[in-house]
Length: 211
Image (cartoon, rainbow, N blue to C red; front, side):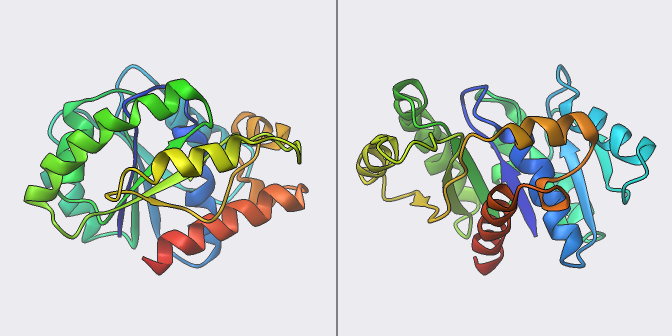
């Protein structure tokens, strides 16, 4: 499976979700590779280096740029799961990855700025579907408030209902300090002590695998 994690907007938590899903996929027995597709950012490759240096189970991470289609097709024949962390913008990397990916995961924060950028992503997605009609798109709400009185989740659900091209994941990822800590330590939250964060990542991964 080729899983593309992307958005037109930066700061939505793509890299954090990508590495956490990678660790959970590995825990499930799958051979995983991470592709960092933004040459100006090293979050994923730095995380993979820290992971190896800290003695955790190795996950390969590589950097790629430009037209990714052929490279991802080759990786897809070698690995069970290829996870692509796309740049936080409309890019050649994201567009070409969309033409070969099985699932496009679109993280977003429950903020107006993130929601307003959805239209641009859908426009890009519509073009990609002409080349890859089997591509499935899952939007994942990330960094949601843990406050039980917050209306962010309901309001975001109502907003995304206007975009039938996108399925909203049932799993919501909440704002938790452990997600920052896992990046610093080269781990996934499924390997750490926060049971709520662990459950969220496991449930989201199962949604992706079900597709």
